[in-house]
Image (tube, rainbow, N blue to C red):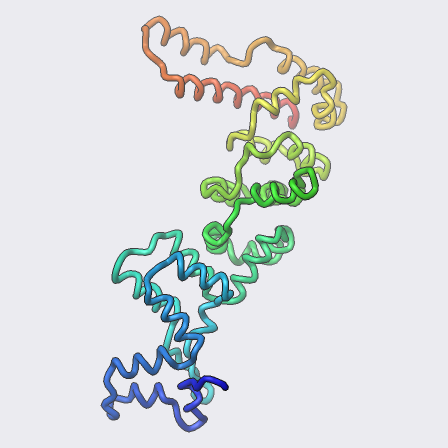
Length: 316
């Protein structure tokens, strides 16, 4: 037997909510609120969960029921006009704000559930359809959607690829979000995703560079960006120092003059320039203590300079 819903009272001539809100009818505000909250049964069930003020429970319910908030809003049409009497997202924010401030992460998650388009786009992106998504939506959505992705995506880009790796016994670099963004030179988005731990740069080996080269997308900008974001310099140096120099030869397209220039850089016995050595000598002379962290930082800077010398030789 079907459960009765208050909205069934409405017809073209009558709206129960309009009637309750008409001050001349002297309907108490709590009665009006009850009518709105029980207007249909799916809304009432959601409100019951919201009113418990347990965000984790609410999130699980939203996920399990695939809830999109604007589909729970109460909007009544009056001829050519429509009026919203209940906003689900505003109700949630108002309720939680009375007890504690929702975190930015929680707010962005809730905002990501406001409409079906955003939910579908997130689902599409989580399913690795990066190229189609960014081609169609990047220019209009910009960073508002990236913020929602950050707070909606339960696993990082590389964790997603680890699942693929376990199934296929190899990481599919070309299906990674990092790879696609590098091909488009979307460095600002990459930085945001790294900051929010959706991409872990050092989980990608030299295959990333090889793949970029293979499709003619490796350039000074994206290589420098990888280096500046702590792409594993050790791996890159070791790769470049291998006896066959295959990657280097491919990068410079067998240009003999460039090859000689690069070999001189790689074959040097040191990677520290004179300025760095001088800084260390001054520290030693002054008996100034230097922490392990600071020392590692100095070494990392020098390695980056070393790689950038290679970049200059490769691309100029």
